[in-house]
Structure formats: structure tokens, C-alpha cells
Image (cartoon, rainbow over the protein chains, first blue to last red):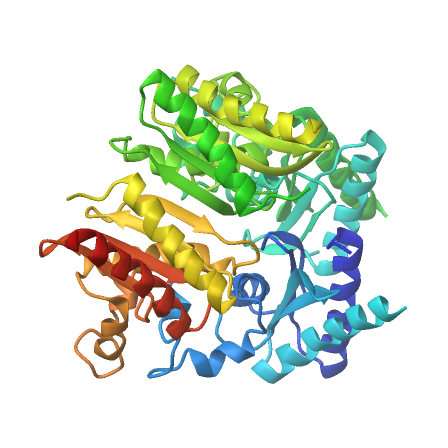
Length: 138
Length: 138
Length: 138
Length: 138
């Protein structure tokens, strides 16, 4: 299974539904396995800064093959990856809200959500990764 | 009337339908009056380069308040705006496929389409501007 | 068939052999279908500028799904894509030496060669695309 | 002795053998005394982010004439070089995996490895610096 626009739109719709539920406007981005944008949506009144952050969260999750919240502790001062947020032209996001998207153990893309608190961003993104897990189980 | 996600998705859907009709995978971007992304979609197998170009066409149409194909002649060597494609960090596109989106004489955003020939890109983007005109007449 | 390091190194070795034959030091880059670097080699005394140009040629060939020499005429003043060399952060190269790499009609990556005249660059890159064609025929 | 492509490929091959031994796909870059790329290889399934990080580690080791892991403590908050990871367009990496390459007390280039833990990256890069030391003793 590879990333495609149809899947990306379903994932974004799911994350948006969660954002609507908690009442926070989000920006949601999905990239493919090469880190390239497939789809992105800005909910009305979402933070402008979240355009770049959501896309970069999705990119980071693919580029580092891990959820962005796992980077948070690793990138603190004195920790092994301190400084990584500056090592790739500013595209690495080191707080939560980005998740790799996997099918059969392979990364097919990533999703990034930005606009609320880190926990809210993660909740919205997680709802999309759960949808994918459900699709894959069928 | 202001740009919002609901409108942006309708505009993109219309441009996608046109792209499907002519059989060319496109990338379509809609920005708001501030030139900021509202939504973007990459149809499967569309050119990677069109991710940036579609978004930059939409941005250019808002930033210069004109369709990008009107820039083509203005930006030729010896013409008044020669060099403008280089003047804003590489975000100005000087060939067709980007249109400002207007309501009541005011620019509310822009649409950019990339993936086919310039004429094909313009056709897809125009189908979306016509949809907007129809919505506004109601 | 997907791009992998083993294939990339064979393609580069072939292009290098051609460069040795014509006596011009080249830089050769191979990217995957996502436009991301797989391998790059700078022959001794090759032009520094060719580091970026070879990689960007390979990227351009994938991102636009065409050999870079086909862009040359399209991107001249008064032609349809004039300005494209500035539309994507300076990564688009509009002269020869970049080729998409295809397997079964699908683009699996791209190769870019820089260091000599455009014709010499194209000769070296072509020797690699011919190798790939031979491998696929087996 | 100066850096050349033949030496760079031997160094990369050695680092790759170590990466194979520990079972982690790495990206390995070698730059010359000018900080410019000589060769780079991405092992299959290595992290995308490691393309830039490996090259920037090699660059940093040359540009600062020290292994990148020695920067780690110097670049912490309150320490003398805090902020350096931000001072050169994002090219300075402040964690381990980059080493200068010396011959007769002179820096002839640098090697950078990325893809595993900092310790794994350093192990792979060290195997290459040891190879160079061995070559020089002959």
C-alpha cells in the first residue's frame, strides 16, 4: 500500500473531525514516503505558523521514522540530539503532533498536525493513525 | 465574503474534476488574501515540481493582484518587470496557471494549478474561478 | 524495481567510465523517486559548482519527469516555462545532463551529471541510462 | 596527501561495512579540506534526515577542525559556543558522528555518518578514520 490523495484526504478528514470535537482550529498535512506533500488543509482561524509546522512535523516523522514527540526529550540541552532542530534547514520539529504512517511495517508517509497544544495536536494526528490502522486490518 | 476552507476545497474539487477530464494529474493550491496556504492537493502521479509551483502561482496571483499569465510578457527581457521572478525568494511564477480570486471587487485569495502544459493548468484553474463567479451570482 | 544504493553505484560507475574516456572530471548524482539523494561522487578536479548542479539535474529530471535538456527551449525568454529555473528555490536546472530513470514505465529516480559541456554531461548520463535499460531487459 | 575520490570511496566502504555489521542503515558523506562534498552514499532504508545531517557533520568537522561530539558540550546553554548550531545557515551539527580527516597533521577533509544512535554513528565514522590512519602508517 502506498500513499495516495484519496487516503491522505481521509486521514485529514479524520483529524479535522477530532479538531472540531475539541474546538480548536488546526492545520493538517500529509506527506508521502519521500517526505513530499500530498495534501494540506488549514481550518478557518488556525494559526498561520501552523502551515509550516504541520508540514514540517509530517516531514520530520518520515525523515526520522519516528513520532515527533519522541524527539522532544532527545533534543533537549545535554541530550543526544540537541541541535537537530537546526540541522536540516529548519525543517525538523521536535515537539509532538507528527507521526509516521505505516503499512505492513513500511513507512508510506507521515501526518503532521499543528494549531493547538501539543497534546491536542497529538490527539488529532493519532485519530488519523488509528483510522489507517483500521483500514489496514480490513 | 472571505476565503475559508470550505470554499477552498470546492474550488480544488472543481479544478480536479477538470484535470480528471483532460487526463493530467495536477497539483492545486488555494491561498487566502494574505497569500497564505488554505488547502493544497497533489493528484496521484503529479509532478513533484508542481508542489511548489502550484502554491507559488496562487501566491503570485495574490501578491501581484493579477493572473500569472499576465506576468509572462511583463517579465521578459527588456520588459518592465524583467527579473521579478528572482526578486522575492523565488516565489514569483511568471507563467500561466495562477489566478486571483475576487468577491465584490476584492481579492479574497488565489488559486494555482501546475502539472500539465500552461494551457492545461490555466484551464483547470479557470474552472475554479468560474465556480466562484457562479457562487457569487446566486 | 525500486532505486537502491547498489543500482545507484553501478549507474555512477558507468557514467564515470564515460567521463574517464572523454577525459573530463565530472560530478554524478543519483536520486530516488522522491527526489532524495542516493549517491553522489565528485571526480578529482571536477568543478565545485557541479556538486549542486549535478544533484539538481537529477532532482529536476524526477520532479519534472523529463530530461533536463528538454527544458532548455521551454524555459527560454518568450517560451512557455520561462522563469521556471527560479520557481522552486533554485533547484530546477534547465540545461542538459539530467535524465529520469524508468523501470516498467515508472520513474524510479533520476541521474544528473555536471562538469563538462552540456553534450559531454549528457553523454555520461546517457551511458548510465543505457546501462539501466540493459539491466531491465535481462 | 590530499582527499580524492578513491580515498573517499574506501573510507565510505569501511564505514558501510561497520554499519552492516551492527545492522543499521547509515548515510555516509566525505568532504574535502574546503568542506565540499567528495562522495556520499545512502544505504537502503536509511533515514531521509541523515542525507543532510551526514553531510553537515562532515562539513562541521572540517569547518571547526574538531570532531562534532566535542562540540556537544561547548554548544550547550551557558557554554561558550551556545547558538553555533544556528550561526551558519543550519550547517553546524553539534552531536557526534563527524570527524576531521588528517594526514601529517593537516586536515585533508572530513567524514560524517548519520542514521543510528550517536554512538553507532561515531563507531562507523571511527572505523573510517582508523582505516586512514592505517593507510598513512604504511
